[in-house]
Image (cartoon, rainbow, N blue to C red):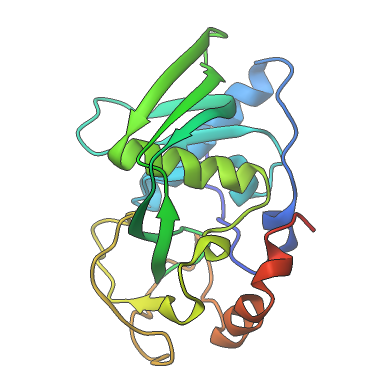
Length: 208
């Protein structure tokens, strides 16, 4: 088991569509274990395989108060219900967050580690995390869902946790704040890259 580097924007692999998993073999099981280790090291809530450079449709979630991490292989959103505005961040955008539109609940079909076919209806943080990570598998990033481009913020860091639902932020132009990140996992993002991406948001919603 290994902690792998997390790719950060603007790495082009984050815009690639991941490929379905055909067999849950030793290679896939090893990848899942590495994803668990990486997510724990990053104090994250969710991680998609392409965030560590592997284009396979696998998501690992570590939802607070759950006994163990959840693994979703070939997850697919079948139904979305309701809309809500919520602050969201991403391990591939360390330190940044913004207000996005997400569903109130989602119904998702997936395969578990044992090969079982599962269908669940998720709400609250689980719903948000599933939408966020399945977006990753389709080459879609949370900045594509920003309610308003200027609402992207550089967040005040909480070194104990990383959440998809952050609630403290400062203006994105204040580059000096929220700067201490684990360089073994990821590197800082240049504000210029973010501004360029946001100026092309209608283009970036499509997988490049």
